[in-house]
Length: 257
Image (tube, rainbow, N blue to C red):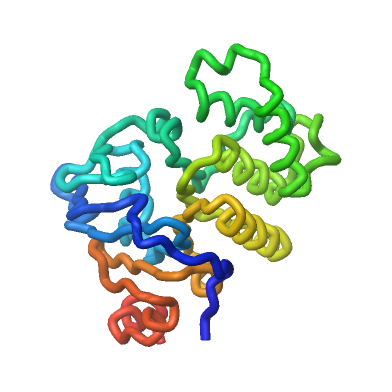
């Protein structure tokens, strides 16, 4: 039986919703009326074959793309098409398949910058980090085990260490939900285990909800309360990890056995 990484109770109150979300690129239909909800305290997985629309969906929900139809709701408010930096300020954070860190800045400075951007906007980038920002950064740097590298330029970190730094930066502003896009891609199993622990800790201690977008199916099945499966831009199935594993359509379309 699959057991979620966190035993924190899931709140019945929605945090992030896709409502009949569609996205077309010219004559290509990337998404068609995708409809699901992430609840408070939930760790929700999003899987699907290459080309299923996962990244397009996340980009629409995180403000990187404007959907052709449908809406995105955040804490009950329509935020469809709102820019990503504004969503960050109100508690929606994300990571990317391609790492986005500042290689010439130190680990500590990257963390400070993430807090300033999420907390006070562009003007805050030019201010010194306040006591609360420094304390938060120190706590998360210790959490992701980068303390000994705190003054090192981020560009000198290994791939796995950069992933951990990006994770720390995403949660620095105390978001209510984090969208983790392929966080386990190309990293060592040890780093994957560390990410699992960090997700569990923040979910349990701070109530952060997570939407995990992954090709690593075993990671998803081990981590999540529920799983959404996309296929050809449409929702194929949603349910607990065990329900999804037993779904014949999912097996045929995705697991291949």
